[in-house]
Length: 469
Ligand code: C2O
Ligand code: CU
Ligand code: CU
Image (cartoon, rainbow, N blue to C red; front, side, top):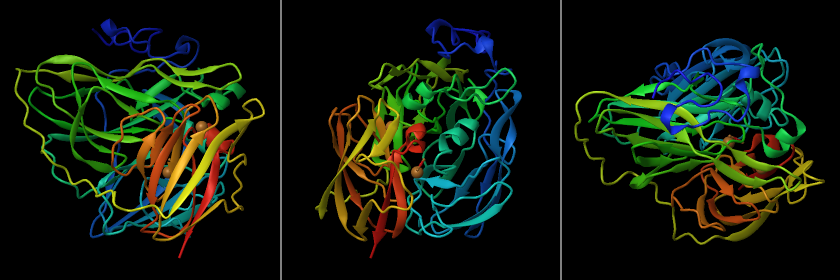
């Protein structure tokens, strides 16, 4: 197998025969570089309990080895990786050099949604700056999170444009690994001139999928790891709509955390499926030399109901290159510091929400209403626990996401395996449901829940929630 095919039309990844894109890259943008060693984004880490960063959102970044008009933070996509610890103060001066309003969301962080915290209702106008202050609670779990813009109506465009970055909370157990890497997966479609393509009406209805799938802004990068060594890969699905059913050829994936929360013990999986917004921390431990592929397998999210299946083709994300004599790997710890999910807690209230589409797929809403930031849709008493049943009334799957207050998935209509640990995105099957237990602890304030197919969120599939004392 060679890298020669990567970047050309059709098949990349050699013998496995994966098609890297459903589109026709020949007609438009071609990656100039494929298969280069995976780079880590720049890391900005806290010291003495503080991290101050300046993030400037603007057009003009290198993607797949080419200068493009895609968007980035501080000139790169992804933006810098922010590393903090529980108890830290993270201050961010966000400067908007885009042509439209934006803002910043720290996806998965259990921080206050109020004021200049993780407030999705803020609107930072072009040419202005805003100072965020995120206080990470002392008891915050260590794990993998990410940041992206959240200005309603423009979220999909801005993420598809390239605005995203990693946010890591340190302080977890020392895993026996030789490298700790981030793999932020995004997709986009570029035109021949290096501009970001605008999706059509049908693409927005399905949720747009980019022709170019990138890892840390690179096309099919390679990752070297000698037999007998171990690496932690923190994988984020930062795509607007694409499902990532992940597999690493020749290996099992040792899953240690999901959505920033450790599992009770490492779980060896053939396949780890990430919906948009989900994260998985896996440990990769090659034992013999070879060339292996991190693949996102074909997926099927159902259909729009008005003609049009919602599928994605298999795609090679990255290549694992392992060279050297075969060697055994060190065992992983038998137990991990999983949070107690509080299974004894009885829910004080049962609540139901329905994610739906109407008017031939042209309207999107929750309980039949499109998002209105001024309206209070759901109000909760701080400190209580609720059991939510979230249904999709459409023939399409929708990844349900709630800010600030993670949930435990109790059951799903398709019987998908349950993590038992807190998570913040769960896929609601086509015409199916999920049942969630949500403890409303740690923070009061007003925030949102929505479909993480961000075209659907931008079209109205989002609602407000107010947690008060
Ligand atoms: Cu990652 Cu409300 O989003
Ligand atoms: Cu979020
Ligand atoms: Cu949706």
